[in-house]
Amino acid sequence: MNTETSGSETLVRLPVQPPKATPPDSPLVQRLVTDFGATWVDEKSVQDWAALGGDRVVLLAGDAVRFPEGQDVAVVLPELRRSASRRFEIAVVPRDQEEALARRYGSNRWPTLLFLRDGRYVTTLPGMHDWEEYVHEVERALAMPVSRAPTIGIPVVSANAASSDASCH
Image 1: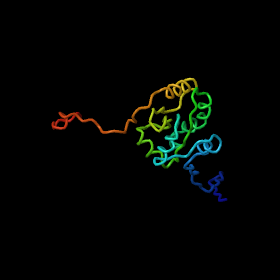
Image 2 (image 1 turned 90 degrees about the vertical axis):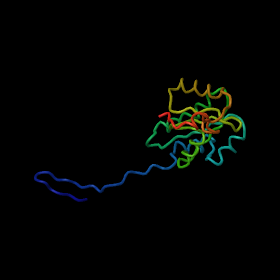
Image 3 (image 1 turned 135 degrees about the vertical axis):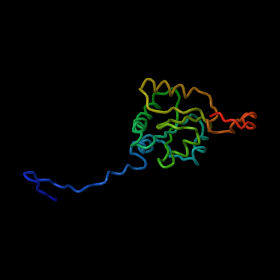
Image 4 (image 1 turned 60 degrees about the vertical axis):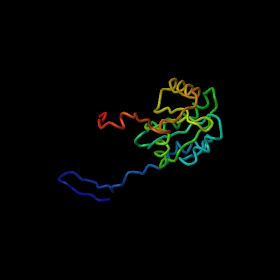
């Protein structure tokens, strides 16, 4: 230990330690797999997993430091499943692959629950919510029909906009 004296004070110099690195997949997200039967999926495997049928929910937790509420969602997700009127399977995405999957399904908020049914998109439920609201929103999502993901398809452009030099901005 290094010490210095400055007048009547003694200063102790402690070694500087770098901040601890956050693991790419937090223990709470990993717990969904080890303790609650969730499946790891990525942009390539999510479609095959979803095609196994039934209602399925993918957690996009986000970076645990920037979006700590993603860890809260990882904790309550098994309880949401237990309280839901319809059974659903859970999947989680490795942290380093979440961005690609989020883009594929038009999600731009962290954390997000992505709802799929029989291999097709249903909806997303972003953020963390109070318990009663969360239960209600999960029930609403499970009751929704399948639809097209916001980013799938060909953008519609007006013929007038294509021939005009004017910009909308």
